[in-house]
Image 1 (cartoon, one colour):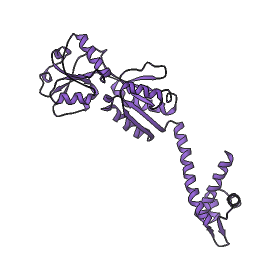
Image 2 (cartoon, rainbow, N blue to C red):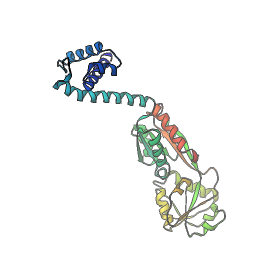
Image 3 (cartoon, rainbow, N blue to C red):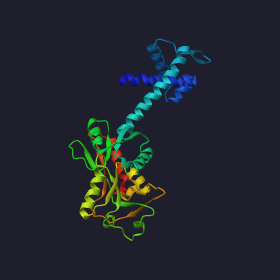
Image 4 (cartoon, rainbow, N blue to C red):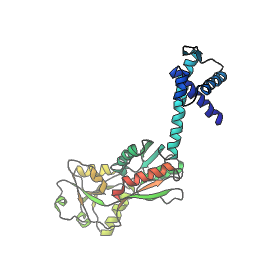
Length: 303
């Protein structure tokens, strides 16, 4: 370790002389006297086995060996300084790679906000988002393919930590000409026998479960005219006039020509939640701490 550092010091001395072509000026630049600088160059020439400078009373010139070494030494020092900087940034949680899996509905509002915040707060972190279903996120966290996840339910697994970062109400999505757009305060009872666009059984997951539980709690049975897997498709169907739906409040950022939203009263236990799930490999690292802080701050208004 000490020998390697000593050789880098010799290269710094060599570069200073090569750029100044004057031992006195190079010594001033390095904040040292000329005799120890000359000694460092002699040691470097001895280690390489080649003369690096042609010296005379009037000038100092690089030899062909010196010209070649100058290019390589400059690159080596730049890379060594970059390596030290990256190591320090990693120790502070400011550099590295983060793979984030997210459920499709989180991609509408939350993932873009997180990506933008990371670009500003952690510019040296490579952010790799991937759209997945919740069970795929869990499997990938356990295998190490993912570092973090955004899932609709908390993961009850000893190796996975879950932190609720979103807890928002549902809103009613309606075609613009629907009568309920003019209702004073729409309620779930108003959805009785309405044509309803829901989430599918195979990939609708948590949002489908919340719909079914809501309807059961109120004893109503909307007419399900279509079931799809993603919120964007639900909204497109409503925009097309196929029916109404209940979507997370954050989905209101999606605007379409024939689509409108209304608040609707629902029991408080029925909310659209989102959890930051952390795999075992990232939980105790400085980078995870910075990511957790960034994500929770970005999504604070949705809690």
